[in-house]
Length: 297
Image (cartoon, rainbow, N blue to C red):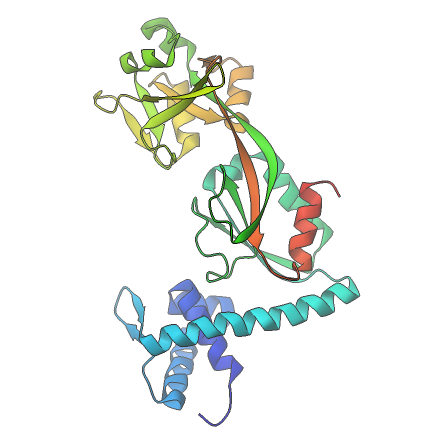
């Protein structure tokens, strides 16, 4: 290859980033056939195979993986240059890639902040991906992520946005029929519905005199329900199907209108919402503006 062709590299980078020729084509505003042509030209120029493609998956060769890791550095450096120039001019533009748990689309605080950001900076584009896992923010091309619970990866910058309360809830009809649990151990006699992504799996963590205790949520009961959607579980609870755990922004409106009752409030626990972003020397202006709105600066 006689000279570096950034267009070909950018196409390759996006194919790997999104694990899809079609998505890469959409993101780059080119046709899928052009994406395929770019990859072929890049491989011919380098005289090696970069991508082993099947009908369903895209696998990198050793050379492809090496090139992709360097593409991350290349395009990160280019983005930093643009960010520096935009910062000097005070312009917020480009694309902000944001990852967050699906449940946060129901949190008015988060959705209002994102809306304010987009209204304040009309030249900014937004790409939101719903995922409960932090993953590799840099490798996946994300600027920032929201995470519920204490993050474990110390390689990112992390700030607590707010505390979140949890509620154990059931409908008035369910409590009337099955009785109210007084202690977490009473849950073994109830229909417990569990959020599948719960970090404690099939255990709910309670506190008793500031000491953490955990109780199994009766997975052996035939009517036990498990779901990836916390909102769906709260709807099932309203319909009297069982007891579930909900975050405050989901549970409180239903508690206030009487559709759900809060039980075991003496033992419920708190968690927190965090914002996480790569530990770069210069934090991009678009990320800083989101952080400023979150913390009212």
